[in-house]
Image (cartoon, rainbow, N blue to C red; front, side, top):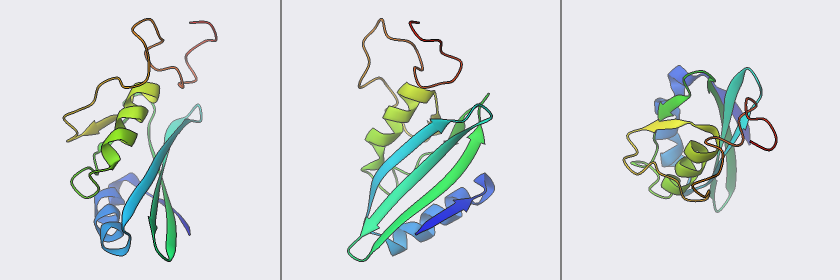
Length: 115
């Protein structure tokens, strides 16, 4: 199942999703050049649910879902590191994949190859 939601409905949607599913499986981020798209994937025994939300590319910030889904922390950290998305409420946003000499946000469209 796939749903696209507005950012203003994000927290309410995540709370309802926590009631319907058992776990978060991933948060995939994509810079489409206009916005940052985040696709949250949730699973349970009989359901796979993907929820897409778009956030401002210039100020990429959204609420953390770690209080509802503790396993989301690592996915939020990955998107913070790769795309610069700030997940407010996640107190553990730090690099986990890239070295010190790596580009700051390598999956952003503004990063040129070889930077």
